[in-house]
Image 1 (cartoon, one colour):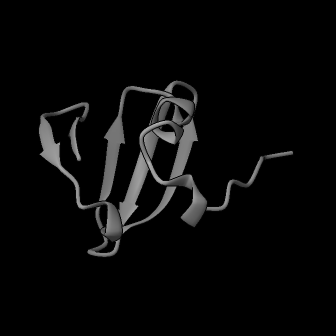
Image 2: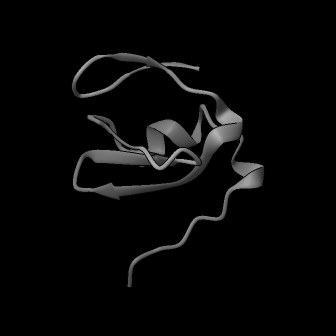
Length: 61
């Protein structure tokens, strides 16, 4: 998957994504390599792109 981060354009291997988080209008994707990648889109935007059947979504209460 090719995505635009807050700093550049990246190629992400979907199998290497282990978790996602959000804060305000930003999404953070954490990879199996230990990277934390920041995106200027909401997590909802990425739910439509990612295979959410293999991810669990937790809500902050």
